[in-house]
Image (cartoon, rainbow, N blue to C red; front, side):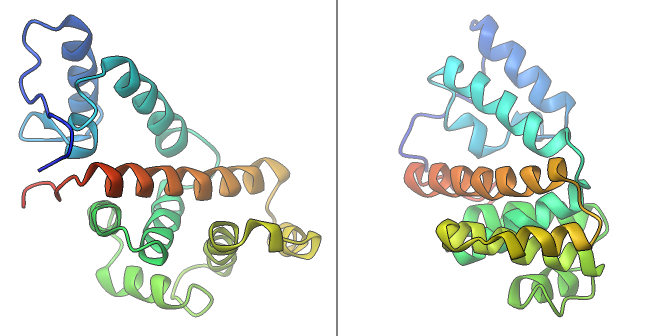
Length: 181
C-alpha cells in the first residue's frame, strides 16, 4: 500500500478523470486503472499532471528508441535498488519483445550484453551519470559521439538517467506496490 492515498475511481473529479483517461489511452494502466506509480499521486492532480507530462516527454517522445530508454531505467533501478521500477520497466521491455535474458545481461554488464554496441555504451554511460555525475569526462562524451550519437541524443541520455533517479525516488519514498501484486 502506498504511503499516500490512492484514488482508483476518479468519478466527480474532472481533472483526475481526464488524466486517468489519458493514462489509459496511452497504455499506462492495468484493467482500466492507472499504474500505482500514478494513482499514488492522485490526491494532488496538479502534481500527477506534471508527472504525466514529464513521463510522456521522457518515455514517449525524444530521439532515443523506447527500448534503450527502458534499458537505462532498468539498469539504474537495479543500481539504486528500486524493485518497483526494475519490475515495471523490465516488464515493459519484455512487452516490447526484449527477452528477460537480454534485460538481465544488460543489467549485469551492459558492455557485454547482446545488444548493439552503441546501446551498450549508452547504458554504461547512463550508469556512470547515475553513480557519480562528477566523474563524467569529455572522453565519455567522445565515446558516445564515436558511436554516432549527436549532442541531442547524449543530452537525452543524461536526462534519462536523471529521470530514472526521479522514478526511483518517488517509487521508494511513496512505498508503492508492484502493479497486480
